[in-house]
Length: 459
View 1: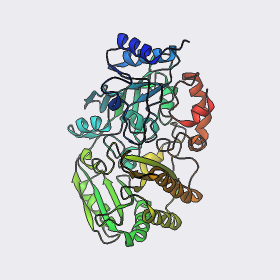
View 2: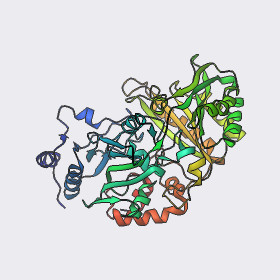
View 3: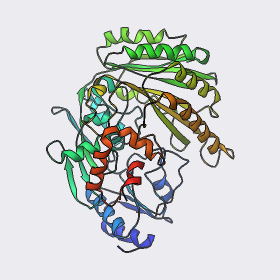
View 4: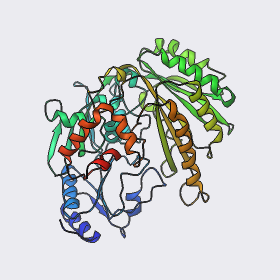
């Protein structure tokens, strides 16, 4: 292995890849290194926007040969900024967003940089859909490899349960396909183990017939939040597969905390009206509404509240149930939030997702539960007051700690931070040792370290 200056690595990549290459002094460098979270300010040596799988392989091998750290940028939505590394080479997949929908086979073929929107929009045009997260701008592959909670989890499972196969460039440059009959162990690891084993350059996702869904959001005044969340607990405990309901607290139209429930009904619309009706009676609605709409429109709902460039800090807990203590913790946290842009969300996991065997995929938590998401959001860097970041992070940490006594071990890897290696490993449960064995098999030198548990164990 030889050491090469940034300009040397950049020159070599420019000579051997079809895509664009940016270094520190190039026009467009700052835009190329930016990610969703504006608080992330890292300066990689080179950003290479790969045109295809061959570019990915070339850039990976050049980085390895010259001892330059490597990171992979899909949708760039990871709040912790693991997609960019100081003094590293960023493999940017933003130019690899092609999607082809095979309606007869019920399969979406997507390149590795495709966003959720790139998949669900053409699928919906043909009366089809698949399980995704609740934000359209998230990278499809990155979201899928860690889990993929969303409004269709009760009916279709997590996004990773719908991953059929993937084309992968391994850290040694080998190009393989992970599929049930072709490297099944790699496919198992990709379904929940994150981007620790290789760079996904294309993937196939199972599609399902899916017409308009019944969904939206109902807002309730903050003084009713305790009763609303308790009522939500009762509704989701008896919810059929077709009904998955997100809930939480945000700043309402009056500037005060408000409770919200956001249902997704994915079955017969007439039956859905009756299933969703109890949610409208949880309190006195002060805003929002529920109605039939295409699934892509439903997941547009949260985009306005989480624009790129704003500063973010996240925390998470898995809750086996929504106890009265947890309800009070969330309501008190909403009242003490230092920013009106922050959000407390509960993602409902049940139904089809809970009927998968814990060892069938790397994602092991297959019991009914709620994913609690603590999102601090504040002004972009340079416009925020001094000390804002520390104040926001302290709030996230306090809320997470207050929820911890009643929480399940571990946490959702896509929200856990890079210093949460212990919780990440606990989250894999009995699958952790098998995942570590897969890491040693596919990435023995620890080139890719998307999830902290692997970085701490394999070097």
